[in-house]
Length: 194
Image (cartoon, rainbow, N blue to C red):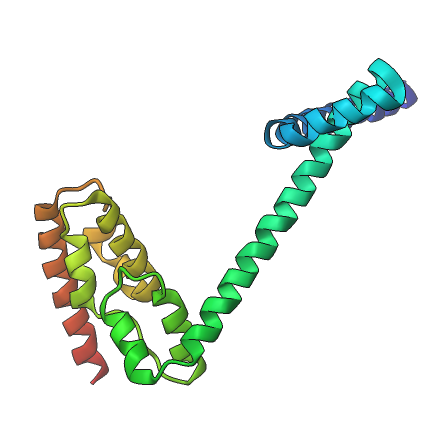
């Protein structure tokens, strides 16, 4: 009896492993077909001329997967080239120019300026005052950007009770109250460090 229970247990495990492999395979095929449909169309056309209907099916799946791989590689390469170009341009700026970029946190080069100043050994981040103008903005998108920068550059303030349920959908008036609490908390921490 024990042998049958052991065999039954192994058989059930094998069934669940096969089921998970099937689920992941279907998800992978669906994702590659959803994203890689241009490759699927091209693969189907080529497959038709090579092997008829069987070639259409094989060409569709393989073309979709190949398109997904090639397009992902293209986008990653393009993103890395763009980031390297911006990093080289920012590295040529003076420290004063980098600090000026940090003073206006809505610019596209804020993160690169922070990284370059860190590389030079200068701890720099947008001021709480410049972030407060974003947090109290009428635009939800700017409030979201302000929250992201606040949590990335002032992680110790995230522990404040005022920010526990904060959202960029909150009204600017609510954020004005929170910013006042954050200023007091920041001043208190600076006094404790001094």
